[in-house]
Image (tube, rainbow over the protein chains, first blue to last red):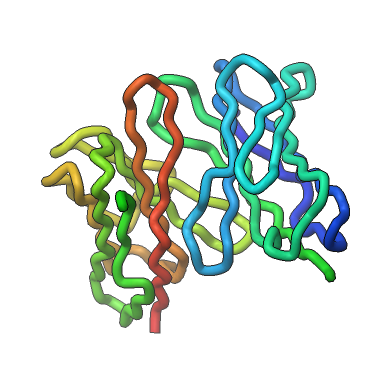
Length: 114
Length: 114
């Protein structure tokens, strides 16, 4: 079955610390992978996406993600977290050229302490 | 600026009522989607439409209905058959050109049953 797992429901970090949010997927076809961020009461904003090529993808707001096919993972990283990064983060997977739907993980809520 | 507009931002429904959530986009995107978001469950697909006058059920379509009479508009009706409609509803759209797609989300409608 196709699925996305975000094992960490809630993560707390200090401002300035590094961050890694985990995402594992199960998908039969070549995956098209996304990370989105959601502030409270708002829609989702695309941070970055991967569909082919270099497995290290740069996104907005200083985020990056690395696709590891052997581990079926697409973890999101940031070297130094800012208080404004506090939000909920969603990983999603879809099929390239098939826009029927994306499968979303259940999200990871990030809390940042000053 | 182009984007997706969802209205209203907050909506209250009495038991047994039908309510309609509006979603309008001026991005000239082909496909539009409705997702439901509940705490701890990520996003679940309700309905989607890839072209005008055509739409398909998603994973949780029961108790919902949609129409796609215009490319720009994809309203969602929550019917009285939906037994637990209290949730955050998100509309999204994508362009299918080139296969390099990414969802654009609206800012959501929070529906509460009173």
